[in-house]
Length: 87
Image (cartoon, rainbow, N blue to C red):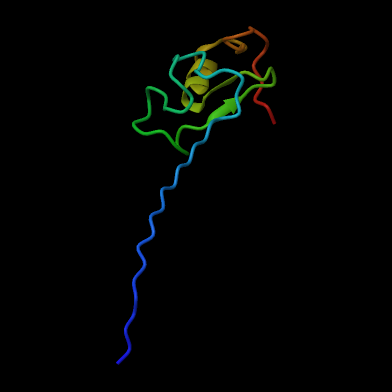
């Protein structure tokens, strides 16, 4: 007769992540980058950060609304430079 022994191992995983942005909050909605914008229900890939050529970061939905509301040319809401997506 063969017996198997069970070993009870405990493992506690801890993970953390942050966006690589200079600020901790969106300059448009003032919500934290590790959360989500007011248009989203849950943080994650549906609410990514978008950087401008000026290196300011915003939630995707926030900057798209901002750009669409500006005429004729959109400017960064933080530094007022002409808005261009960082590419």
